[in-house]
Image 1 (cartoon, one colour):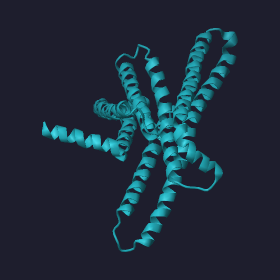
Image 2 (image 1 turned 60 degrees about the vertical axis):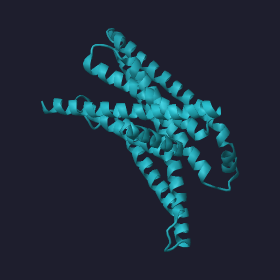
Image 3 (image 1 turned 120 degrees about the vertical axis):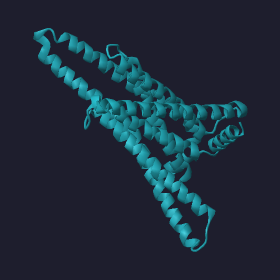
Length: 301
């Protein structure tokens, strides 16, 4: 009884998070899309934010349809929604890491020729990097779907005793390969995000220390801006790390009972996504202006 009540509670939390993230993603796409229509161009950061928002919009809808469909109609197969969720989840990891790499390259400064070349070319490389992220996600989901259907075939062929031992070995190998592939395709963008964010935080910390030495005893707006940026990066790093760990534990299927704590786990995952989306909106001056305008219009009405 208590478990059932907790499931309903976390289910409601999950739905509220679904509505929040859907609203955030829609607002970002509409705001930046309007600018693209008016100016006939979109800055690289806004291109990444728009792509990430579209990705999360479909990720949330596929998650909601798969979770509620599987919960209320367990006899039906909602595999297609699961495939869409996995595809958009992989893509969101790569887009988030691309955003971190872009900021790191544009803000930091090194004298190495490769870094200088990348700093000069990163703006023009963003569309190609977005396309590359999409292709990697497509290839990964093709492998996952193929492995799933091969596993089904192996299970159906187990009725033939002569081949049962070989099929069990093939099934185990395929399962391990599929799990490894899912982990690797998420670990690589996470490590890129981690390296870019930690490097940027280290550079900002060193620059902030130098500024404090020069402006001892005096308030400075630049100091406050650098401190705020450093705090934001620390929050981004913490949130994305927790999100990565929760998704990784879900893939490896360890530490919790999916039947009892499924909705609690989903609520935790999308709470992290919601906070991350909120911080992304607040970090953009354009989106902050849109939010203020919307708040003023609501107060006026």
